[in-house]
Structure formats: structure tokens, C-alpha cells
Image (cartoon, rainbow over all chains, first blue to last red; front, side, top):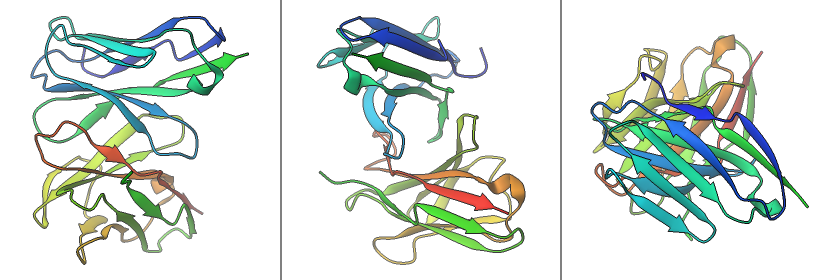
Length: 111
Length: 114
């Protein structure tokens, strides 16, 4: 994998459903994996930064896992709420400062 | 809570004109970045800046682009002669250190080149 890929591109769930998204990234020269939550007209909000293989991080109902050997990360949202509706971006960082972003997963949660 | 701010929120310019996009990073941060997102595409890295010099840049960041920290608070991106394909959302970000993994983003400036 040369680029960061995210799937699905978009997702529509009902309030209360749990959901997850996938981020695939180049596993060579890996330094860190970032997840951001981005609502239109607002700043992308940093959710997680993970660096170690097997890392799991949690913030409220949102959690993420990291597999650096195979180059993927999962983001989970438990009991989705309408306010979770946003685009979720992942970005990998190799040597250097640049974040290499995926196209994002657009989540819509309806009541 | 400290945040990165950007002005203007939307800038419209004519092709060939110079534009300056402004950012105020978080006050105790030392590393500064510009990214852009062309509509429908990925967010792309442009440049990182530390200690008054460019520390890394992408192939997008050609001679038409320059960055500057003119005073202790602002960080600017200048596009010397805008092209239609420069139309994009430009994001500024900052971090407290180079090894600090967290980059904090501003809300972006939407640049429209006519």
C-alpha cells in the first residue's frame, strides 16, 4: 500500500447503532497514525494519535486500534449519536513532519 | 481552550494575483504547517516550518509559494501568482514539538481563483 485508504467512503446509521471504519496505510517506515473528526466549517479535531503496534485508544464512545505490521487501523463508535455525524479522517506519518491523509469516511447518524 | 485561527475564512481572487493567507497558531507551539484540500480530493501536505525556516515541503510547494512568520504570532502562506488550480481549502496547523505527534488544525481558508 502506497497511499492512505479509508473505507467505507460514507456510512449512514441509525442512532444507537455501533459502527466502525477502516484506515489502511503504508507499513514501511511507519511513525504515527492520526484520527481526526471534521465537521463542516469547523477545524478538524484530533481524536487519537497512535504509534505502537497493538495500540488501543479510547475517548468516550469512540475507540481505535492500530496494526502497524499489516498497516491498518480501525475506528469504532459505540451507540452512535446524531452529534457523531462528521467526516472521520485518518492520516499516517512516516519520517518527517508531513501527515498523509486518506479521503475520509463521511458518517451520518439519523435519529 | 487554545485554538488555531485563520483569516480570512473565504478569499476570492483573480488568476495571476498574489494572495496571503494568515494563521495564528497556538501560542506556545513551535512547529507550523500548511495543508490544502482541493474539492473532492485528499488533504495534502504543503510545508512545515520551524525556527524561521522550512523544515520540509512537498512537490506542490513550488516557487509560487512562500511562508513567513513575520512576528511572534502570525504565520502566513503567500501564493505569488495564483492559478485556477490553486483553488482549495487551505489549512494551517501547529504542534508543540516536531516529535509531538499531535498537529492542531485551524478551520481553513477557502481560496477561490477566478
